[in-house]
Image (cartoon, rainbow, N blue to C red; front, side):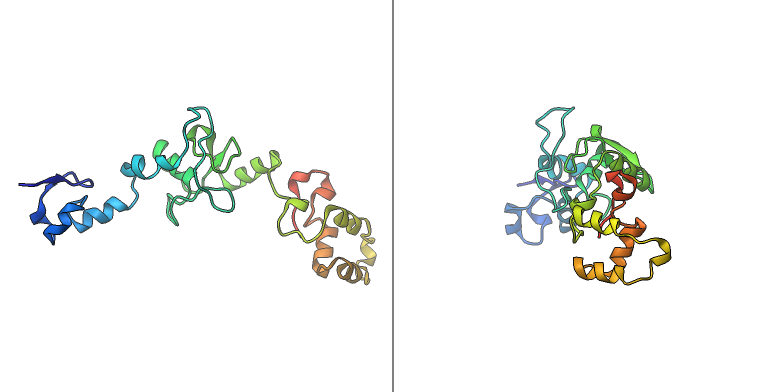
Length: 208
């Protein structure tokens, strides 16, 4: 009698176990439930469903780039859940659970890298500080939301009036000249955006 081994549960099954004998020719699993589980990612499926999507040809010390990434440069593995991002999946598969409140950060600063040897756990604040310290935060003209150039921001800041005159019409005039809102002008003057112009530390800048 024909028989196969279910790829999900390991049980031996035959045509009589399926709803239609013709299904046996292309069946990989002994039941619809096992087939559903077989198609759904789980750590035991990593060698089939995850690692083939990661380039590990560089060796244990090199970056392991994911073959596909989202527009931000990260590799998305699933749409949601603990395995949503490939680098988090790599950590979960090799290092175990990620504690609540912790993020998987990259020492190599390569977003698509999935080599656990290049990761460390950090809180969100620690991750942001690490990003700033390495100069990776988008600020000034690199920030996609910015509507003006660095030279324009410097010119606006240079025209900041004394605090006693902050209520005059200068902010309104500058907003019209640079096609910004009045609030954006005050934000530059107050240092809430383009912070690097105030503290001479470009890694801390904001956006307007």
